[in-house]
Image (cartoon, rainbow, N blue to C red; front, side):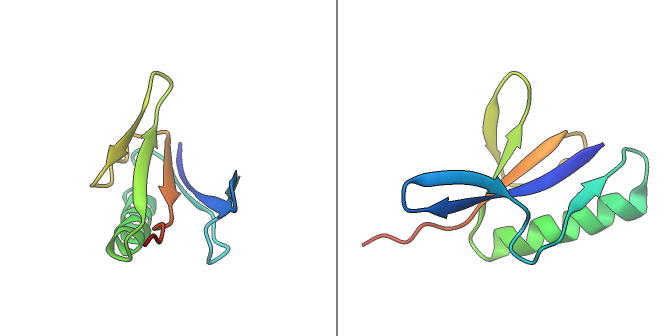
Length: 82
């Protein structure tokens, strides 16, 4: 089973939270309906400028396309700067 979580940034404190829309996104391998829904959520957040990372046991790396084989995908909101 896979899931998508978001990182909420408060000043310098990072905590994992549910997605801002208060939804929980999970999918089971082989369940195409759940995978398609997760892929849609993933694409909408990336289109809004969020960053995505595959959180695998051996490493965490940035991803640009949804991969249903990931056990966990972490979404991070865009950080303003200036």
